[in-house]
Amino acid sequence: MKATFSFIIGFFILSVSGIAQVIPTIGEIYDFQPGDVFHKVISPPSVPRSVSRITILDRYYSPAGDTVFYPFRNDHYSTSLGYNPPHLEYSFDSHEGIMSFTNLDSLITTTWYTDTSEYNDTL
Image (tube, rainbow, N blue to C red; front, side, top):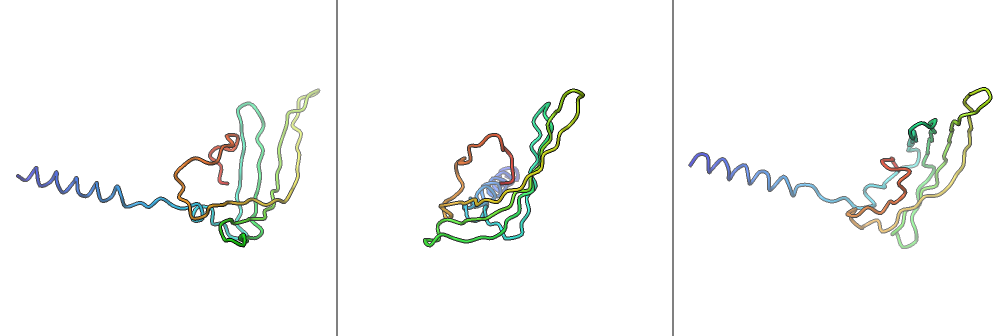
């Protein structure tokens, strides 16, 4: 009897905790603030790494309120291999752009980001 009761209580706790998490919306995940800074390192095998610092400059919404726009600045540096004699060459650049996310009230339930070169990235 005691074992059956323990099993029922354990099953109840597991079933309740399994539904405790709510699937977030796109708007909840991509809720950046002006001044947020993201660091991105791309370090493929046998190639020198490159690094970006992405700063969110502003945030505004479409007239319908279903799309958020983030103007950003990307400060980037990369290295490449030089030859004769072997050495590293450094490249620095900056550019500004706008990224956007739409369907803000939709749940994040599918993989919609398909650029595999930036897999596991912050943005």
